Amino acid sequence: MALSPDTVPLAELDSLWDFDEPAESERRFEVVVRRARLEDDGRFLAEALTQLGRTQGLQWRFDEATRTLDSAADVLRPEDRRGRVRLLLERGRVANSSGAEGRGRKSFLEAWELARSANEDGLAVDAAHMLGIVEPPAEARAWNERAMELARTSPDPLARRWVGSLANNIGWALHEAGDEAAAIELFSLARDEWLGDGRVGRARIARWSIARSRRSQGDFEAALDEQHALLAELKALGESDGYVFEEVGECLLALGRASEARPHFARAFELLAGDPSLTDDPARLERLRALADAAQTEP
Image (cartoon, rainbow, N blue to C red):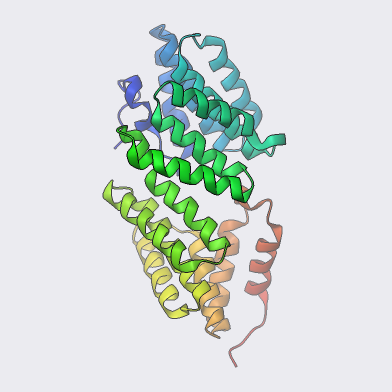
């Protein structure tokens, strides 16, 4: 559970994050920023502002995020290398998410080099993982592998927490290359890492990914069983996930059960139509809409 923003120390600032709820995280970091201003703690204020900017970027408020990061730069002390790394990371993330030229590559490279020189392994892994996102495939894989090696060998527990995310990223690269067996191995590692430190929601993402790879292997029944299990768990929690509904529909369609698939595609379209991460993939949304509306029946 996250610590209170009224008492959280600088070393545990990341405990305030809930990446699935950026608006709630924003409210917490706003409290920390006000507290840091009152306490006249420049180091704390600079780092808190970088994280506040990150919450705004995750909500696609890029101009506001940039202004917040500019405020962090204004109060950053020259000797504060950790704060500078965090500022570089968040400037890079805003550039990447907003589609700016270079996608933040220069910022991430500088963050990697500065974090390594400052022995901030957790932040160095973060920078390498972002380079694994913005670089072309060959370079991206090398950066992900470099990040994984550091995460697994570093004494920094913040670096170790990256293993699951990196395994997930490498797994998707393998999936896109058509190596489903290797992808499932990496997704399974991600699942186990996330379960091991209590990130059950993240582990569900890994389970979804394993099932997605099984569908690509042609094991439609196994894939459908896992997606149904995820659907039931989310329902018990009072939650819905458009990507799970989409995959249930795809598995049913692959099994020749088109009429059963239609309501799942309809629910997927309803949940995903406003997802900003799909703005660059209108064909996917159009396909969901068409499959939901099509007058298909089983043969």
